[in-house]
Amino acid sequence: MPRLTDLRFRATTSVQRRINPLLRRLPLQTVLETTGRVSGLPRRTPVGGRRVGDDFWLVSEFGERSQYVRNIKADPRVRVRIRGRWHTGTAHLMPGDDPVARLRRLPRLNSLGVRALGTDLLTVRVDLRSGSGS
Image 1 (spheres, rainbow, N blue to C red):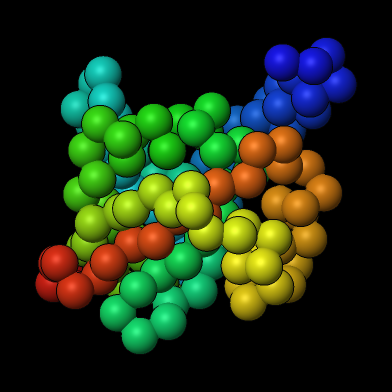
Image 2: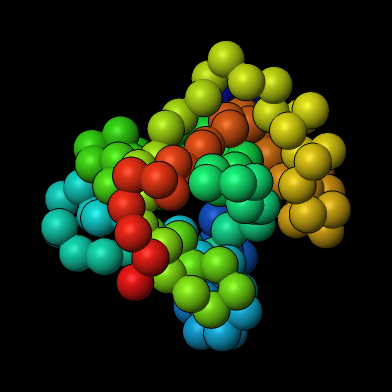
């Protein structure tokens, strides 16, 4: 991995480790909950994305280096908190999708950050039909 890409990844994840615990407490923040692939514990990550029908779309800024993407690969069953309400579903990694085009259809502020900081964009679709709201 090129040095600049690695530096960007390390700097961004360092900041995220500090602000994500605060963001996920905000009641209207969208949060993705995966199951830790090693610990088996719930892992909650603030995300930007959009619900379209029975699907929730987001773009991972670091692709398969993102911890939540690694967790999805181990167990695709997830929950997504949208507008304060939890929904269960199944996550699907979409390497064939154009993540830059996808970001144009997602919330603008988050999309700008993902495009500016991201090094290996990967689209994720959560099928909310496969679970019920809770």
